[in-house]
Image: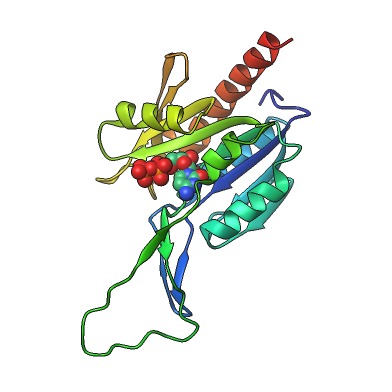
Length: 223
Ligand code: CTP
């Protein structure tokens, strides 16, 4: 692989987050971490100093500079913010839980014969937080959508003020927990590019090539 990111520092989030209800139960999602780990491997292979901040997942660890394991969205945000200062490129691949239980019980929640109402509060948006930093890195998001992919992804690209978003279809056996994926790349100036369905590792290499090319294009514009 060409060393298109030689000398660059990349931070990547991957996997799900788990939001604890009590010591034995949590709210999670179906992300396997496969795509994020493949992107981390591709970035490292492209020569980047790569930090992977990973939620709970069983994937074989890519050969990155460092891997930091986290559990919840709050832990993920804390670790991202600790490592973002000298970062050139941030890629948010994680399926971060949008909500967490308002309270985490220190002891196992017991049935009391009736229904249980769980109050959820919103988690911070890690990607939007990075993109709002005064010295923001080149910021790439993912959009996992079941429908109206382009419309939802465009809204996220604009609302979160990203340099690029990679949208993909999830549900009905696509996206989560499978080996193949396809991506639609969207840019703020309206450009679009489709990366056809292929194994997640080769798709990740294509994505990293596109990220490097766009990053360099913007760098050249500012010099
Ligand atoms: N993301 C994040 N922190 C959150 C939620 C999302 O960093 N609390 C990032 C994801 O890593 C991904 C992008 O935002 O790069 C889009 O995530 P997604 O779950 O598709 O969208 P949401 O913004 O959560 O919107 P919705 O759930 O309404 O589709």
